[in-house]
Length: 150
Image (cartoon, helix red, strand yellow):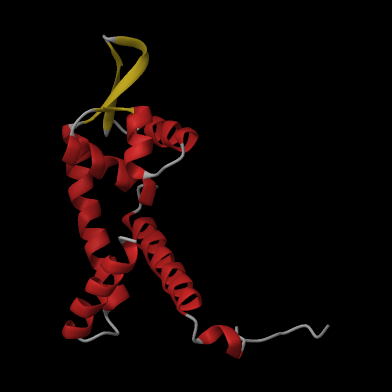
């Protein structure tokens, strides 16, 4: 087997397949988000943003519900909430109706940080879509929404 060295190349049977192209675009989007969050400088990542956004939009929720709503694994939710709580971005309190369950809410500081992260995410969206014309960007969003709803 020959070992490939040098710039990454794509085998011709892959390069025009939608699944390959979507995967590459997703990888680029993830890298842009990671870079944007890293540049923000507070150690927060995409899943922190997702949890804060869910709490801001839907209000207090149990940790289990947050995991279900956001598609984040239960153990990752717990770890992320511990990090957010240490930064005073969320509060966790025992649910008076279910003593074994904790209810999570966003703090005022959490809402402020979320607004800052919104700016980071907005910039990443623009960087991702920058190669497209405004009309292509709108068309892309329509197409991606249709593919995502399946």
